[in-house]
Length: 604
Image (cartoon, rainbow, N blue to C red; front, top):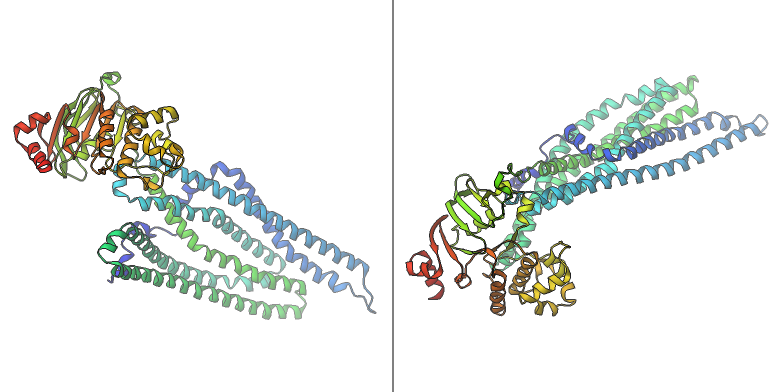
């Protein structure tokens, strides 16, 4: 198998593997339309009226041909006033019906489009709300780019289904039924000639549908690979350029892009064959109408008006079938998108809190790890029998080499994950007995990689908590040495930052993160390598701000720079997921163990 062929298997969940039409998925989708069922009934009523009026228009021509147009000229070249009057009435009726059709089709399209967009609004909001509540472990398994695709492109595919696919499919079926009934009522013999083409049309459509589904599946696989490769290449453009891999990377892109083109061309070929075949069947049916209709005209059993009606309806009879074939891709895309969206919605949320114990009302402020074991995957334990306690008002530091488990401790404290064995307690009560929202309201977190939003400085410090007044934000920024550089920004505290605070230095971003933590006044402050990437220009300001932030506050500090933790009440040394040493800075240096060696590596 070539590399291009393998690309379609790179992202199997982006390929259509289920049915082209899944009743279960469609029923679940239609539940989102239930709040708008009254409007849906209006649309159905409009479709019925439009179908009836659409059938009535050609009947008016039949009546005109067989009636006033045939008898308006009397012997001797004179005109029949009654026939002319009847013709005028038929013309007026045709104009009124045409105008009514235009108005009704507008309302039909408008109401259905409104329903579709409102359904998408509700579904998009539900997906986003669900993603907001998903545990962090879920994002470890699902790339952000793919989740963004779910809430944008996949929902857009469903929008096309609701705004055009469903209503037009229903309208096409009603048109077919209406035309068939009309033809049978006018002349059953000619109607059978028309309907004789239907089995051949269904056979061709079935073969086309099978091939189109197969090609569409391959096309979606290549497209998923192309999107993922493009995103990865843009994100890693610096590495690609430094190692001079532009040409090789482009060649890989060209291979994936070419495979997608080939798959797309197969789909185009299927459509290019299908539509001419449908036209050919229509021409053969028309030939049958001409042959049979001519004989019946000669016998006098069919009028010219009836013959015109059959000729007119024959063209309209095949159009809905062609339309339904064109919308087959819309249906496939919608079913595939629905399956992926519901896979997101069906993913389990954060586990509910355990039943509270009698001690749950106690708040002594202590945090304790009790024989905690934790693994991100199977039995590959990152923490092994870890135990320590953080008393109210204490600053406890955690140090260790890369991979020792320091950041995992932070993840457990924030309840991004729960211990596999052992327990984490707050106030002497298992963390799982506390509601997540209530527990996290007591925490403040400052990470090594500060995340800033594309909002104002006020909003980045306040983080949507309107109970924090502007004066409090300014006070916290001033206290932690951030006010000076903020006032230099255009607009000061009202300045809207670029994405992730790209125009700020790492030290300035860190000061904003400190101000954010102080403004929310947490009971437990957690710092994860908060000064690891601070630039020398603002290092003194950051260190001063850090001391102010930690003063008289319960805190857990994961540190790379040992200078930031000398004044910690206790320092816990992790090594390969285990607690190896515990004590003050002076005690650990005197012990001449792991901590002492780490200290020597930094200062000697």
